[in-house]
Length: 406
Figure 1: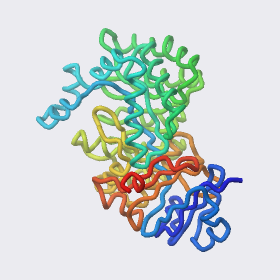
Figure 2 (figure 1 turned 90 degrees about the vertical axis):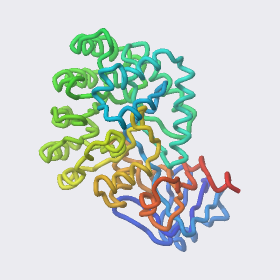
Figure 3 (figure 1 turned 45 degrees about the vertical axis):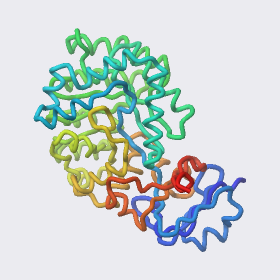
Figure 4 (figure 1 turned 135 degrees about the horizontal axis):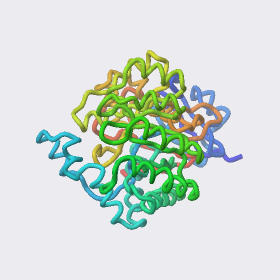
């Protein structure tokens, strides 16, 4: 058996939501965590000199790799003008009504060829990886016709095959209503044309809907999600982002893996998610970019939910950084650094049905980070810069700023 990596003398190891170890070490063998514990104990059994890579983490913190459970990272075009428009007082809904927003990106994605989409996504994933993301959920939904949605999913599959970051693919044909369609007509197309083609293609794992006033009603979303279930796709729901419509209760009803955004969710909604085992995915970067109120983390915590924090990286929320999302979760939603990091690791893993990820327990995949800071608190405390020095993915060092600066 190969001893791949030993990380030793860490000031702190964030094993998982319930365990921190001081002066710790992690041994990685055959792509999995072989041991984690006090440095003296670990290196006695797994000597660093026997490892392919030995990392001195003195004065630093070791974390599980971040699991970014909600992104729209595959896109083309540029919407920086909308950022400026929002600063001048225009709302998200006004921008959409003028042909901007999602439909602007749809036009750019339809015009782009598959290779360009592949290159765009690889570039974004390179940035995410350098900031500690080792697994990322990415949605389609900027195609809004069968050929374009399949093109997006093919691009996701191609990038997943050769990039260190694992890509979790989600079909989101019900992201917006394209020009020239009535809502009911387009919902029928998603169900009768897009979903069968997506199922035949075999790339997507989840099916998501934008359940929102002026987009898709609860009943329309229910039809799409139930059809997706029949084709083997696990449901997810964009819920209560701009208004309170009932998407959270729908997510609980259909047994969704997650309900996401939740800026206008209630305590009743939180209890429904907890009862259903559906993970609330909170996206503080979205509230920040919209200038909106943040989601109420406490009501999900009090209900007993496993909460996730994610970036929502997209042309309207342009941040690939999970550490920034963690910092916003602390300052904007009142989460403790420990809870926010747990939500960005184990919580994110729950939201994408990857229960083996998000911790550094023995036997789990060896996805881990070395952070330049003496404790996990430094991730949100030292905001606005990248403190992630080294990223290990499945037992291999895949990003290392130490060697880049040497």
